[in-house]
Amino acid sequence: MQRSLSRYTTAFLLPLLAVGLVLTGCDSTGSNMDDNGGDSDNEDIAIQGTYPDPSSASSYADEVAINLQSAGLGIRLENDPSASILQEIYTGPSSDRSIRRISGSSLTFDQTTYSDLGGGVDLSDAISTENLLRSDRLEAADTDQQGQLRNADQLISYYLSRAQETSSNGVDFSQLSEKGVAGALSYYEGAEILNDFADDGSVGSDPADKWNEAFGHFGAPRDFAAFLDYNSSEGLVGSFQDVDGDGGVDLTSEAVYIWAGYTAERAAAAESTGNPNDFARRAFEAFRQGRGDIANGNAPSDHARKALNAWEATVAVNVIHYTNSMQSALENVSGEITKEKLESPGGFEDSWGEAKAFAWALQFNDNSTLSDDQLRTIHDRLGNDPPYSEGADASTYVDALVGDGDETRDSIQEIIQDAYDFETANVTAW
Image (tube, rainbow, N blue to C red; front, side, top):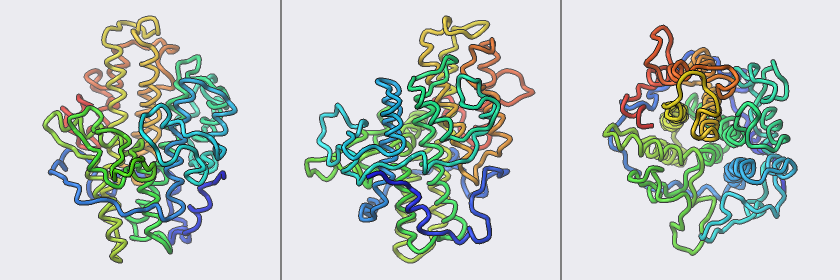
């Protein structure tokens, strides 16, 4: 059964709709939240319990399907692309379609096809239609309409129809597709819900279901503590675990998906520097406690802010992480940047694609810590494609990414570090 998110995202009309104040774009001038997720909030955090079982609500499986479908897009584009199969995964896979994310694992899973989740979601119908900043500057090989602003669905549909991992310019279609869904659908909808809870404490007739929806987009298992291991570079024991010991892994409650996984990985890196920033526990505890607020008849506004702040800060750290990766790739390159001078041009293109996708994701929180002008500057510094065709100088490009160059302009990392108050040691480690 193919399903669209519209059947439940419109089920609970927000009070704000009546006055036209609900998330209409990303024109904010800064965060109005209490804490921006920076390193100043480094107290020890302990997870105090598990998240209440959300699976009784039929819509919850949709968020799980979204996470699995977006991963499937990236995997197929990298390994065995087929335009027809990619389009099927994007618009709602057939019921008997195997879930690609879990193939090849030795674990036993409770769900192996999309019918086991109730069906796939039509991602193209659910994804944000907000234009991506600076998308009008993409080259002809990287967009369906050169010179025009495009939204995530338009670009992703174009990339899937091409069924290739990278463009002739080195733009990584697989990263922009998978992370595009993660940003313009999962993060966008999660941020929308949490912002509405933070604003007035409720979203309609069934706040528990809407809160569960945001938690599903975040992608943490019910018992996140059992998965966390900051001695691991990924911050996790593993992405899938049979926590309850029943012999199978339940994909709706015993799996870590993209955003929750990133919070753990970035927290582990910060832990290793001696400057803790526990994005994972901070976000999960806020989700768990906010769900408790709702069960007790209280407004979860404060916990909505805390969950979203930790989530947004993680998105920002991802941009830092992949600019660091590009800097490392360019360490031995002098003069003009070319594929021939890079030891692994594919790795550089992958890092550029991830940085670009996560920079776009940051625009989908209407109360973002970063202004639109700052986000445009980040895109300008990063460029429209890996800097082969522009004849960019390696040292100049690195300065635009991580700083230590022309003091008259801020680099990408300097803009983000200042906005979120990140420790320098963590920025380097990420």
